[in-house]
Length: 257
Ligand code: BV8
Image 1 (cartoon, rainbow, N blue to C red):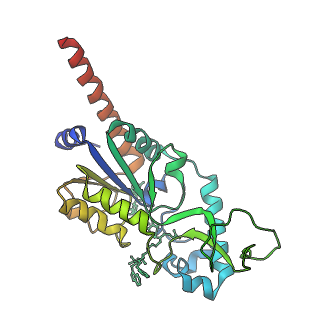
Image 2: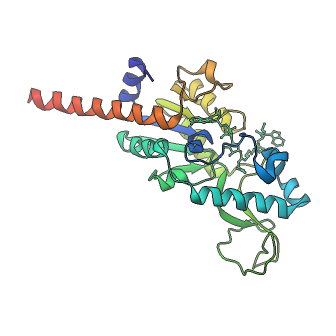
Image 3: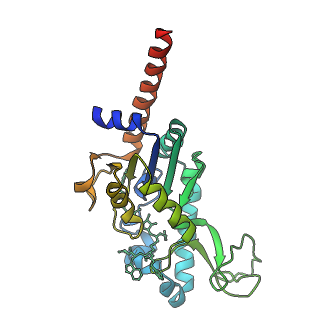
């Protein structure tokens, strides 16, 4: 993959970098992307039909089992080179913010520190009625299990479609998107709102916007730079160039002394 010299110059000169990731960043960890064809039991369902409060009310067991299956896939998955490259990039800039739509926690497992989880986290469970996070509950054999406080049904602590976004995280994400020098949109189909508005907000506020995705998205035509390839290949390559630049700069400085 050839990374344009102009992009390298702009990223190397940046002080504030913001990254938005989607399910594509976890694809190379073997976690199916959100819109990949559903397999097995779930083949006949679209994610949007399962990831909603209505679906849970209609068939709590089906939705709980779908998340249980996904939770197991995530637990067996390892962060891939894309996650590790982003954790390393965080150390190269005075201000680096990572916003993720993913619910798999792989950025944190790769060492990324300040991750803004817009859509929650599949490894956390909460009470459907109270909204409180529940970390242990008696194994009564109920599926879904019952809240030990109120007896309501437990559910994954993720943001379902047609549920409001977490206010604090959304505010932080908007701030990070409208106040940055470079914005990377990586591995997202850019169709789920309001997360999909963030690259457009960054562009509107004067950031250099870079898209990394093997496929085009509704944002591709707006991006300043489009790196067409898998994040697990492109990001390590970009990181190596940035690190090499830093090393050469340091050598030039010391050779002048
Ligand atoms: C909201 C958690 C308002 C769950 C997710 C009616 C009422 C209210 C709202 C709406 C409505 N109608 C529409 C809406 C808006 C709705 C929406 O956007 N719907 C879509 C379907 C059009 N949004 C909402 O409902 C949001 N809430 O608007 O609140 C409100 C206010 C008050 C009261 C009520 C409501 C909430 C949206 C959150 C939904 N939850 N996840 C779960 O995971 O089960 S979203 C889900 O999609 C995942 O988080 C996923 O990350 C996200 C986005 O998908 P992508 O990450 O982009 O993944 P996808 O598979 O689509 O694409 C993968 C990409 O990776 C592809 O481009 C592919 O090319 C690329 N790729 C593949 N391999 C690689 C790669 N890239 C790089 N490297 C690779 N190797």
